[in-house]
Image 1 (cartoon, rainbow, N blue to C red):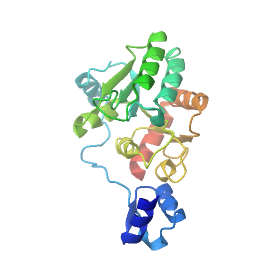
Image 2: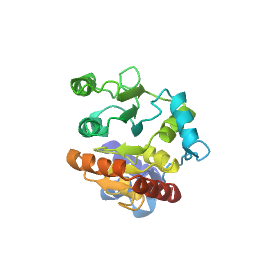
Image 3: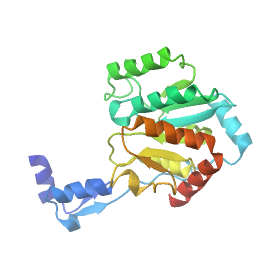
Image 4: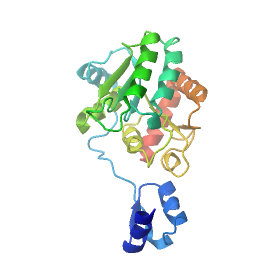
Length: 238
């Protein structure tokens, strides 16, 4: 709009959080030299891998998570754009096969925590979980502002899922990479593929493909060595 054009003319430089945003600015008429790519940094002193199995058990206890569980983690607001509904659908199918599988969703779930929350969307997700008798295996933490606590959720998890439909960059991907989690994420050109190289340091799948999300999650659950490979590579790439 007019404000965007004014910004393009008035500012000497514009910082873009992803290659996709940079390309959009160039397509809108911003001069090549004015659009700079600057990816946000994550504190590696806070977000770092779990050291051993004993520490993982201790971290789960601290967070009141089942010690013997395998945990799929998602971090972000419980909204349509983040693909929470897609992850819930995939998890419901997987939970039938894996009795020790849990899903932990860290992020705002009501309008007191974030104005972007749509109550009807959240209620629909919660109904699906109740209908599947999985209320004790899908854990909504709500908003977590303390980075140390947030980092503990990453360290307690076994797989990180990011089935987003649209994103600026995906700050949480960088946090998951630093904690050496195997990642499965939606392929968004110029955004998620800036960080995740498919089948090298994680998995990229088409957005809104629930069946493939379920299939690839199952593959990660069944193959701890592949999980470790992707996690180590993600940490090195970050």
